[in-house]
Length: 276
Image (cartoon, rainbow, N blue to C red):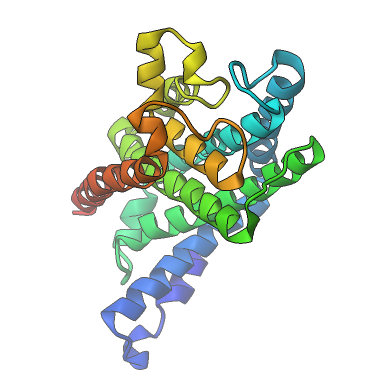
């Protein structure tokens, strides 16, 4: 708890504003989460390696990109980048539930700190890990032959859409973690991520699926992001005849923004109730 004490000590003497307190406390909580990485390096490495294993397995063993005209690897890698944004939520959910069950939140409440900084610190650390995961996946993608073709600006736009999806998934995970309440319930909740991931166009084009299933897949938020980033990267599979496929960029922004608008206030409100 020394890190927390450092972040809040002497604030009255500094005459800091409420906003600066919130920023300082949030950064203290972020450093607390980053310190956990150093103490649990295996968990961090597993989180980075797992999506790489899936990419290599589907690219070389299973044969991703079914129903796609063009290079299967260039279809698969952007989809895997989108799917990677759903991975790692279990560690975030575990961290939240462990803080709740071990009384860490109660100890934080006894300190002169902004209560919401706990969630902000957790989300910042999660996003930093997501950036690292994207960097690793991009490196592996290049190693297996994937390339983007539309320039740096379009690529940065694609990375922005991927991180926006992750930010939305993060707040869903935080809310579900507080609903679950206990670490042993996290695994059951985490299973819900898999249907979202596999009922998408990450591994195959919706055109290759039965009509009803293909329609569901096209409207999946992850499919929207995968299609939009393929289009931005100039990879195959970025276009289609349906409204959802033709407006994938709009949906890739709209879906995450809508999810954040729902789950961010729910998570903040629930955490505030826990803090009283």
